[in-house]
Image: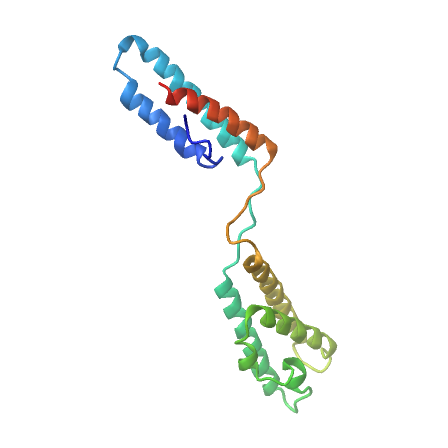
Length: 188
């Protein structure tokens, strides 16, 4: 009896291995039964292909963002924005308004939750102060983009460590059919 815990994605590996083993071990042992072995290999191939087709039609998980890269980008934006504010002639706005009294470099070292909130606050505050800050549109676009990426990374980190795919009922049905063929072939 085959392992009943073969998951749907492992069927590709087990099916191919079963076909290879039937061809290597059984073919030629008793030439009169070679036709039966070829039939079994063909049935296994058909079951493998059906299972593969079902799996290929399943929705793919969203690609994950590289959290280290996103964090580095967010930290860079905060520090650069702080330097930009300091470089504005006449200091039209107080940088403390954006950074809540902290130095940008200190704020940039926060963990992801606080960093996400900080970038969101900076973007919201810049929206309110946009008339006073030259180049506000470009900074707003960059801050909003980084804020969105941070939100995605934060959700990724909160998600279950083991990736869980939602598979439809047709996958379960196809797996049962595949196991039937696989178990029959294991008996050869």
